[in-house]
Image (cartoon, rainbow over all chains, first blue to last red; front, side, top):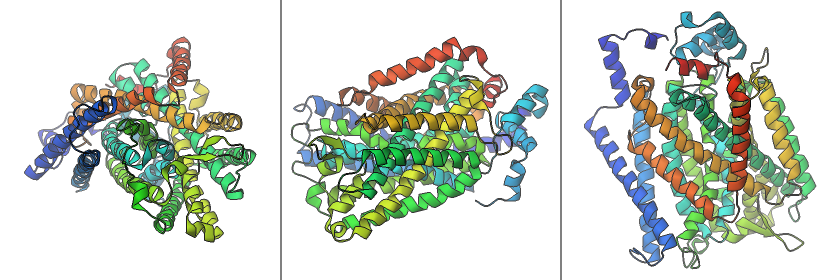
Length: 95
Length: 505
């Protein structure tokens, strides 16, 4: 249990690095990149919502219903992707 | 869940000291005799596993489905509440992942105190610890009030008696004080049973509400109130936070968790995903069964509008199935109480552990950091938490907006420390990367940055809502910081785990 206080060998450092970076597959990297992209879209959505709340005539995109569906779709996609990334990350550690 | 040789071994104080030393990455030989003695006196047991963490996470938050969120429907409608709720679900899913990283790196009962202490200095540690203490304490108060409200509704659905509500709230406080003094493993078992009961209660609600479901009530025309437009989403957001606030209390259990690097992330992620399902289904069926304004407010016999603190019970009673069958109404309220009691139990756990950690480290009076000689439970911290809650329950007899204020102060103080915690995560990742070897959250930088942006956005909307809680929150911070600067700063206990970890930074 006290291994962190002792000098680490090259192999233990390598194993620690592997644990640190999670599942190192191209699929995992793509999932993380896609999730990051959708999270940026969420932040843009929130910024747009604040603008639409205070200046209802600015930057209106479609009908109100279409705007709501778009916002709900972005938020739901972000939820699904973050959940998937969290589960994959947890499962890889379990192995 | 069951006691096994490992957990039995972990109940030995010497083994617990070894595990604490390992968690703060110190060799046992580096501990001074007085520090060993201090840890032996103040260490907690480590019996919690993944299922316990899942039950703690779901149980502590599930009351959010039973009351509180419905107040955001008032003048905003179901669609605004849905968008606000999805934002909150996303915020909390990301938050628990980032929190798991901090919690595994520093598995101490102090949680935010340890993060702030290690990142900067005792002042940041205190501000973060105090924020979480306020969050948990006000959530305890709100849940005690709602538990009383549900019991009063059960006894007289037409006109719930305020005195009954106060007495039932007080009885809940006393009962759970005694249970917590008894011990954490026993609590964990009770928590699991109550969590299953609470989920079962929600399933009954969904089935009953589905019998009177209407899409026109969910998706009204227009979908957002024409007078408010997108402003309705902003106004609903502070109440939507109540769906999931306090899940971070689980991070305080890290010190009592076996193998926290494995147990905490798995337990937290599973709990959060369960809760997101409960949020969406409860919103859908509640708003589909009863008009959203009726879920939020009720008119008292004197003609005054009052906040509804038993929305699901009210919905069940208003639908044809509930009107025909009193057994359905009473049965649901009885089971629904499991949800409130499960949360009360978990939130009280969080509050008492935070008081305990601040007392143990000397930031609050050291008496609050004492544990029971044989049961190893923080009795003084539990007593203080219970007395404060009981005081507010009694005060609610005359203060009609007590539950709104408790919900909003709890969520506002939570948001403050979420932002500070993410600052700590960025700083520590850069300064001490080895600290996070055991677990690292996915979507490395974007995830905590999004937590900061969404939390800052949520804090911003508090300035626009009708119930003003910013002055009260500022006063509470002033009281805490006043004590810390004039008294606590000089009493910091160098042998507390949070201080040992900071020394080793």
